Amino acid sequence: MYLWRNFLFFFLIISFLLCQIFQLACAENVTQLHFKQNQFSKLSINTQNNKKIFIKTDTMLLKINKHGGDIEEAYLLTYKDKLNSIKPFRLLQTSSDFSYQAQSGITGINSSDNSRYEIKPWFTSAKSYFQLKNGQNELRVPMLWIDQYGVIYKKTFILTPGSYVVKVEYLIQNKSNKILNLSMFGQLKQTVKLPKNRDVHNNNFLIQNFRGAACSTEYSKYEKYKFNDILNHKNVYTKTKNGWVAMLQQYFVTAWIPCSEGDNIIYTSNLGNGVAAIGYKSHSFRVMPEKKYKISSKLWIGPAIQESMSVLAPNLDLTVDYGFLWFLSQPLFKLLRYFNNILHNWGVAIILITLVMRIIMYPFTKSQYISMVKIRSLQPQINDLKVKFADNKTKLSQEIMSLYKREHINPFSGFFSLLIQMPIFLALYYMLIGSIELRHAPFVLWITDLSAQDPFYVLPIITGITMFYIQRMSPSTISDPVQRNIVNFIPILFSLFFLWFPSGLVLYYIVSNIVTIFQQKIICSKLKKVD
Image (cartoon, rainbow, N blue to C red; front, side):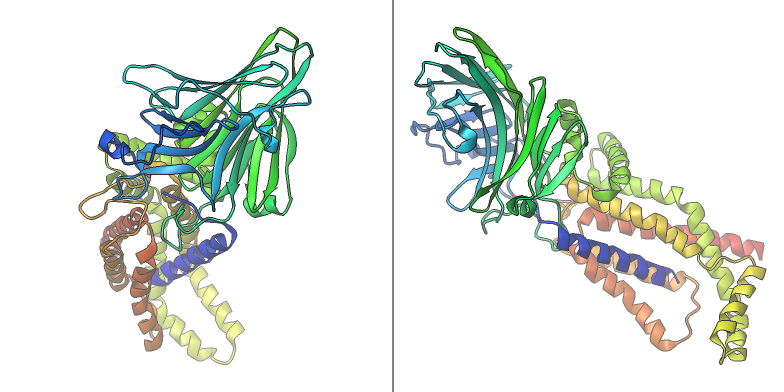
């Protein structure tokens, strides 16, 4: 009975995941490590290139094109590209077959800077390489451009240590004799089709995350937009106070957060050649002759760290997409993080959270197991009813239900336990594949990444063994040999499926099975004492 319940449980999960796979695009995976200077030197940096500016802090390396002042490359120095790689993770990229950029600029009727429409100014800079030094609280990278009317545009990138936030500040000095009506914009653009060398997801057909655009407005805390919808011109054009725009993939986020007051326009756009964009345009502002005006915006380029993003902007932490079970995944993650802060091991934290969940669900487990034992004790009477009403299936069902009612047995109690466990299982699944803190997080020995599958398949095998043991100790009402053989095959089937599951999730299921074994032994011993 327990194995049949597990089989149904697992079937529902797989059906759900396959549906998600059909709907969602893929994404990518990370945990922190200090990137050494000699490893940094292996990055391809040509500081003699007078068309580019390079900025290095303790958390990131940025490459900015002076033609427009757009961020074309972004390396996250505290995150590895792959588990055993020495290369840092590259979030933004510009190449012949793929583009993912963070653009910003000033646009308007009186502006010669219309970078949003690819009419870009050429900025000048005092040097091509800027580095945030130890003990330095702030790094300012100024760029200058003077248009044909003498209007001075000073664009400054401001970075701080230990942060993934880039503040982009514009200072406009109107040296012309006309009134300027301008707006600032921030735009994220990305090629929808990924090149073969751009792997933004785990090599796991069951692990799929949303890759696309998102925004927050005063009317909606969080809205997602599929890239294909944007390419099909299902575009957004919304006026809102505050808000933000973002592009998402597994574990990483790029987001523009306007700092100006007033109404902003949030939009999506098909830029052609398979490139989708989401951006914002600030409220219009005036710059009178011989006057100055300052406006700014913040750009998050980095891992989806919920705590940091929630401080930066309201609802930005919702970009850590836990799906429709976010209301379960978020408290589970907070509890998991609490345990990890004490134990400093995410695997042990998973074990503890599993114990907590099973203790909470113990009353349901007990009720289910008692019902199974009682049903098994009634099996001789049920067999007599099957013989007596062999030609009347309706009457047989009625008599069996009447028997259950007389004995105060609820035959559906197992499904109540299933209905409780399945959302928790799925919530934990999305938490494990969506939380950056678990990317490359080691447990013990060969388990060096709890968000990836077990490389030696030890945990899935242990899962099958624990399930087989539970099957042997659980009361069974199956007498047909064919059905019994099918049930005996279920642990093997489960083990095969779990080969592709994140090792953290398999660890959860192993601990859950072990707790089930002990709980059933306790319940069984109590029932024997009652008898």
